[in-house]
Image (cartoon, rainbow, N blue to C red; front, side):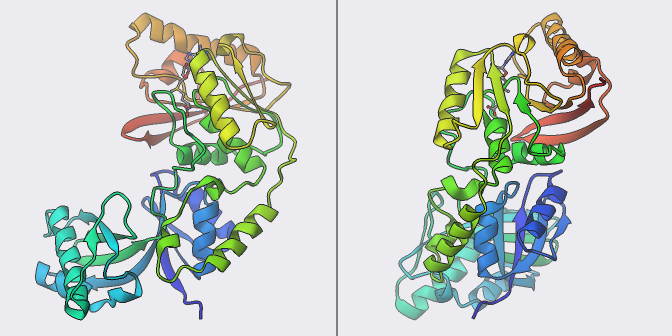
Length: 377
Ligand SMILES: C[S@@+](CC[C@H](N)C(=O)[O-])C[C@H]1O[C@@H](n2cnc3c(N)ncnc32)[C@H](O)[C@@H]1O
């Protein structure tokens, strides 16, 4: 039997629509976006597939129960109601991530403790043995959300956040989150055939995410493990089939030019190493060159850049740097679509071109603006 699962995929604010489209393309017809999550249903095959293939999901959660909760006693009782032996062995390890919003429960750590006690007591009563807590690498990770009086308890099927693809061993100081990079590329409407460039590529995240997209390579193929692989109901044959299906859809020979450059030799070394880790050396070229000196491939194409910010540059230097970006775009990128994501609040003014659109994202804790340009011919 393959039961219908109620699932949510978590994502970054601003990527809900992109993720809902990805989920629909993978077979979740009912995917519905909300604030930083997309809700959908499906079977275990779909659960494995979305973990492997989604480019903009942080993690995929499977709901185990949802209940009204007035106080801690009720929270404890409801969690004890669930038959935890379905999900965990008495000698297994457990972690609970609590999220409490607009609720009389004020302390999320206390809520997690109560939930853990309920699960541990159930095992101890049945077998005399109880699971232990392991926050780093548990057999089972749970998410407990309490919003006002409603609690939802989820199994976290992903384990480590899905932005940890596994190809990026080397990074510079301010790499972009992989799933934000994948989201920005998809939002740009890149046709996956015309040239793609990153003129300040750092560790190469945009380049690698672009190549994965163009060649339809699932971002999860580099991962060591997903959370569901440690579940009691893990179906290794089903996951193997899902993996092979995804591999069969790869188009490793897709021809499009993907070029990165950075003026810093160490960044270039890192980017080349990461490209190699992803097995994409034949698809991505990385030059050690300043943006202002780089010659783009014959376009038009899509240029995505994440210029440095927060560095101790004098104001005149910052202004000159952004002016240089604007002038180079006008001189060398006529007809190109350009996306610049920057945490520097004065970036748009400094660049001096009028963005067609601006969106706000968070790269980690840093608020960034995504500036969208179409450079006139
Ligand atoms: C914020 S980092 C980019 C991070 C990158 N998106 C990643 O995921 O690793 C900015 C990069 O711009 C590079 N840079 C700064 N000025 C440059 C210039 N004029 N031309 C090319 N690269 C430049 C820096 O060396 C740095 O690697």
